[in-house]
Image (cartoon, rainbow, N blue to C red; front, side, top):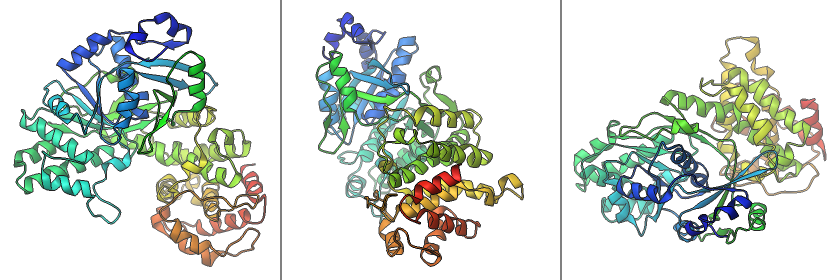
Length: 536
């Protein structure tokens, strides 16, 4: 059987294969969407198909929504050509449960799918519709960049700023031009909702659109009312969100199971832009979406699907809870030790009792006393789910090597914030920074990791990191089994507040990290023995 509208009519074969079919009139949904579009989404990748598209399907099945989602892809048009069009814009969602079972569901909530480079006129028409309520985004954190590392405008951004809202080549320029189209057709209200996994994502999207509006107005390519429209939250809103759901690249074992169940044409592909896609998406069951409730033209009842709507401050607190305490620090701890101990899958690490004790100690004992409690998600329950359900999931093919990428850019938030909270504990014994053991151990392990030598003494490739080229020379003459002290070589790193968010010597932790580093370097097996010692 094949994934298309015609084959969906043969319900018995899908039931036999254990695939849940959509429970709404898809033809009527597409017709309604063409007449009164409400929701357009930019970014046709795996997270969209596994999360927002599934939320829309739930509302359609509950009778709380009559229109579907229009999806547009502005970076990698091959996704539309090869994973949407041949399958009538249907998608197969495979939910990977931690008990080793799967659930399969056809997602049919996508009314139409467009490449922005060839179907821009259709999108312009959609943006003139008074009924449009949401333009959401999953275009990755880098998708909001206007400049390079040297703060120079990217070439396509610079070209679009000069050309105005007519002839465009950049993703963000096209989005700004669509907002301009809505402005000149009545300045109708709209919420532009970034669902990308980056802090204060709504502000990043606003800054990009405002930059285009301001540039075009200054050059006389748009009237000043357009800039006022962009800056008026009663017209265009840019809500903050926190999204959390792991959607790994399509897994071959999942594909093989689908083929064995009778599904044809489930092969994955890698596009010319190195995007891993397939007609199916595999994703974990756990998911969170928290959104600032700022929708000037109304919105679907997404709260009926488990989405949490709140104010901006609470969204920020949820983000801090996740990134500083309940998930990201645990991920980084596993990544660093995983590379040193030769693991290639996070789920396998969760079979090591000492690694489990490590992240339990970081989360429950050292993190929770200073956690930011958002009030709408209970932090301990969040950690419980991370440790007991998400990280041990055997279906999650996530690797410590991937998570270890760019660690120098993450430490200040993932650990530095907690250290600062301890320092401002005003003498409370429970918040004595010297009581921290496992967080300093992870920081020492990261320095040990930068040597590129695993616990057996074999070399490994350090994951990409923008600071590696400057950090490696400071550690170049340190070898496994070498005795300390290492203060002179470690001090320039540990005192770097840009890396850790604080000078670790000023925090009273620099010497402790040095001591742990010496223990981890004692010889082959020292990482294992040190881990056991401090997690006993």
